[in-house]
Image (tube, rainbow, N blue to C red; front, side, top):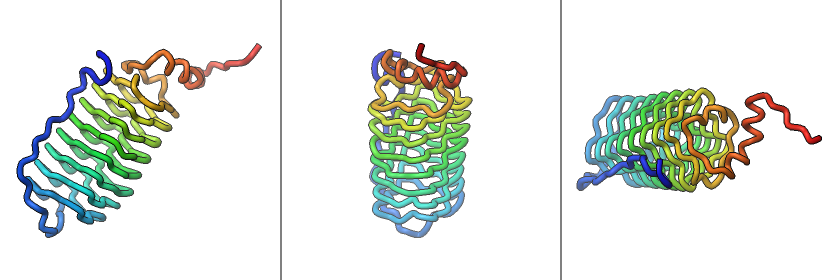
Length: 220
């Protein structure tokens, strides 16, 4: 990999002229194409298995929304917020998420391809067993993100604060951690084969590596 996020293919999204969402209600398995959801309360909606294509989702609440197995394609979401949003098993392809404020997001088993998460803060993001390819987390704060058992290929975290990251049993390929603003790994440091870090980060992570290897470090 080159400097920065070289090698990561970012989404290129050109939304068409969008039609305003009429508020008729989301439904499981629904098809939503070319719609703009703006300043809309989407809390507790059930869009399990639904498809959102060429959509814009702006300043919407997703509290306790059930969107498991949904598909988001060529879609932009800006300024959304929510706690307990369920996107388990969802597929995101060519998606941009900007300045989101979310907590307890369930994306376990999800498929993320060409996704950009820019700015904002996400607490307790569950990406267990997910597959991430060409994903960039840029300038955002991730508190206790869970990548246990996930597969990460060409993923970068420029300018991000990563606190309490769990990489247990994760598989990393071409994962760029060099430009992380803060890197705190709570588990799975031994799975960093396939990641790129800076020398200074290696020194900071030495205690974590030693703990995982069962090495006792004592003075004298």
